[in-house]
Amino acid sequence: MSFKSVITRRYSQLSKELRGYLRKRLYSVGDLDDLTQEIFERAVRAAEKEQIENPRAFLFGIARNVALQEISRKTRSRTEPLEEIDEQSDILVTVSPSEELD
Image 1 (cartoon, rainbow, N blue to C red):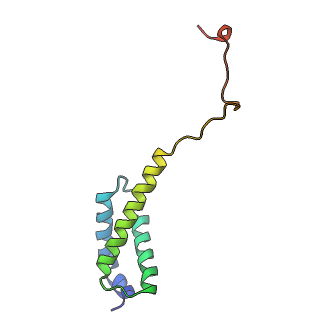
Image 2: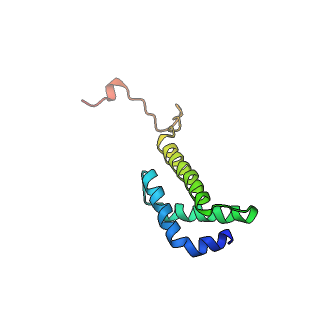
Image 3: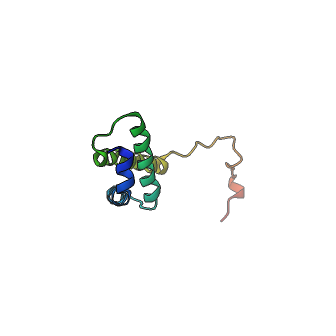
């Protein structure tokens, strides 16, 4: 049986299992539908190039990679340093002692 036919016949069950797998590993569950779709898209593309012996294991391997990439992406977006402010920028204003507020 081809990989695509396995996916077609078992999509509902596999999708549910993959969503559960992702839910346990990710901080935010808001993207589960998109990430699950990404898993299936990657799997179908790979199946066009090579024979997949164990479709379920293959999908969960992709799910692991997708989860790690999502964690990395979210971590990176939270910890990116702010751009340095140029000293000549209009944002910086020098206040003289006579202009200070009491």
